[in-house]
Image (cartoon, rainbow, N blue to C red):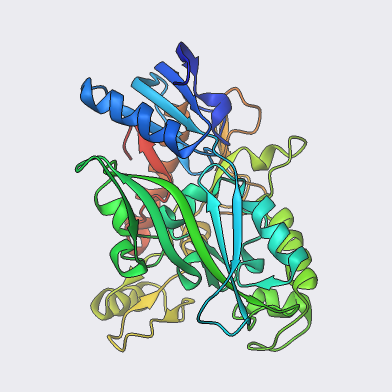
Length: 355
């Protein structure tokens, strides 16, 4: 069983570099260790925080009064898809695998399906929880199975995509937080040197192609990394804008009635029609934030909005506190609501705090 350490600061385990100490801390290097550590803590009635890459996490200044389990399991299993006539490959990655390293390998091997998710920080285990997505792709398009430890039943289970309840930046894991610990994720990818159809306008423009066209995998990855770096969204110790949790707010999806109200307040505002035929629309949170008076680089004490990307709230010097970040987030959320009547929802997971 992994060693337990006391009073380990959690800030270095988050990309925001924020958060106080955990009462206890364990490094879990295999699925068996993950299950064993969590099961023992549950038997003892101890609170558990499962840590991956910490890229989507906001931890209280007071830390975590329980056991933080740092998931560091590694391993990638690759096999042919029995039903794919050799055209598809099944990739099962352990939860502690670095996500971008996996994306890079898939591009190098000629496995198409997650190339537009390049550069996203964090580990494999978080991808189904957030239904990670960017530039027209999301992991729900390729995930076929998620192996979890079910803390309610004490059993290890393989969940289907339907059981995962994937939606925009959401999953059933978020609806019942803490019940499941992700152990491994299985993706089915296409054997191809070409990307999937380019589905995001900004990426298509960068690549010089039309929507729906395909490009070599390496070109898609390079363009995505270039776009992300320009927004401070590729981790870089030399770039203070990357001390963030990525996009802090999700793009709100408005009902037809809410969309009509926003149109009265902001005629001609940008939007994307949702494909469900309900009349609902998705509105870019970055546009709402900027037009509510919060430009790139907007500062509040030791924190600021990224100088490159309006959706990212940053800890540029590393000297801020979580309370500083939440004060800025609250100011932005309230300002958007006051001007546009739209309530922004935070994307990162909150530990010991709320917005």
